[in-house]
Each structure stands twice: as structure tokens, then as C-alpha cells.
Image (cartoon, rainbow, N blue to C red; front, side):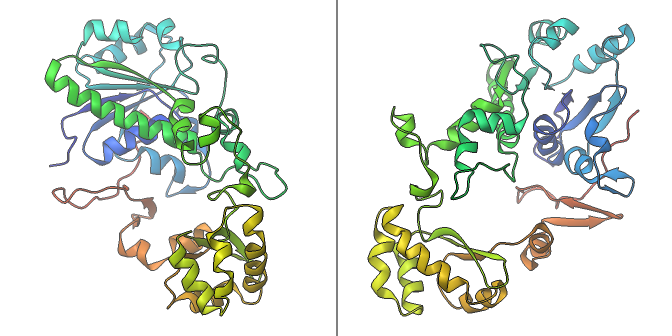
Length: 359
């Protein structure tokens, strides 16, 4: 039996953080009812479309049920109250204050169902001076400091490839909901959870912003070990204009590579401080990597014990043999779906399902 079988979730969230949270619950047996406005979750219209559904929408909403409700109407509100009467979890992602105006804030819902675990997801939390400031992932990353180190050598920040604030909120929300469900087993009472994208992302800076956290200066990418200042944690351009990375700063990896290149004399540079002291080694490696194509380097590194990887695009990444071997991308009924990231030995193998049509 799936771990969350018997758990009923009413999900009023749209787009990414909330739907990702409830996707992980649905993938493991929860009965998720996705409540959408009459026009539907905007993600339904996001291209590309495969087998009649948005790939984005299917991969975030498979295995759920969907119901269109107008919460500004008496009928819509009555139907939502019916759903919440025996719900275990409620998720919402509106701006702070919206649920109270609609009559479905935690106090109102818990008064009728004290066992409910109610989770609100927002950009900056339910209170404080930023509570009503509109923001999606990029703005949160900008205000949290992360965008400042998502930069190149010229110091120009670029749009991140991953919606880290969205995903951090979804993961934190899931963890908090499961904690609250465990706590309810002891107390019999649910709880209210305030999950902010900003709050969820901020702890991710502990390993790069130690000085700033302790009251000092902000990190500068080109002088940081994990942000571009270390030769063995860096990106290099190859002869064909593609890229590879060295992704392990341990001395053993530096020793192995520099020995293979007959430049063990450069090892003291790899052992030195990140930044200016390692720049001569970075420059040397740039020259070396520019002499072969990316795929030639992949072949060359095959028998070397070095943390090395080619930089792949998504087509190349998804076509790798181990992705198929681990069942990470599943094709079924004309659709492609990314499998759940975690699986339990005691559960049956996951099977892909469609996302629900709006009723």
C-alpha cells in the first residue's frame, strides 16, 4: 500500500510550488482534489502539448482529480465546504488575505474541521512588510541574494535555469505537511503552516554566504570555491564550442588529473585559496580543454578518477542510458513523464497517469 493512501488533500494552488507539493503526495497514494477557477489552472495552456495535455501541467498534476469552482459564488463555496469537511490537508497559494475575504481562512476551516492541516504558500509569508508584494521565482531569488551570485566573470547576473524558490517552497511545504500529519497522530488536532518562498530559499545560502550571515561582506563569485573561483569546480569551453565541468575540489581529483596531464607541478595551486591564487590554474585548464571536443574529453576521462562531466542539454540529458535504467523518464500512452524522485521498497512500482480534465 502506498504511504499516503487514505489521506485526502484539497489543493487550491496553481502554477508550481503548491502543485509540486501535492504531486508528490498524489504519487504516493494521497487523494488530491485540485480545485481550480472556472477558467482552469493557467498551466493547462502552457506549451508544449503532448497527447492533448500540457507537458508541464501533466507532470505536475497527474493522478489528481480536478474540479472547477467559482469561490465568489454561493454554490462554489458550498461545494468547497463539502470537500473540506473530511479533508486531511488543504493547500492554498493565494496572496495573503484572499482566503479570509473568501471565508476560508484557517480559523474558519479549523472551526469546522479541527483535524485539518492547512498550508499557505506565498512569496514572502502571511505577515510583515513584504507580505503583499507580488513576486514569482526570479524576484524572490533577486531579493534573497542568490541572483547576485548567479553571474559570469563580468558580474552580470543571468536568469537562473532552475526555479529554486518555487521548488524550495514546495519541498518545505511537503515536509511541514507531513510533520503536521505526524503531530496530529499524537494530538488529534491539525495545524496551520505559513510557507514562504523567500524563507524556504534563504537557508540554501549557508555554504556560500557564511561571511554575510555572520555580519560581514557578501560573497563574490570569482573568489568563492563553489561559485567559480576554484579551478576544480568550474566550467570549461571545449574545441567545438561546447562545455565540460570539473565538479570536485578534493585534492585527490586534482592530483589524478594533473598527473595524467603531466603537470603535477601545478598541484599547489589547486590546494590554494580560491580566487586570484587559482587563476593561473584556471587559465591553464582553459587552454587544455580548448584542444579537444567535448565528446573527445568524455572519452579521455573515461578511465580517470576525476569528478568530471560534460555539460549536456536537456535532450542529451534525458537520453542518457542511466535515466532509462533508473526509470526516471517514462513513456506511456503517448506521453512522457518524469518519475517520482523517491521510491519505497515496500511500494509497487510507480505507474504514470494522466492529469485530470477540468469538470
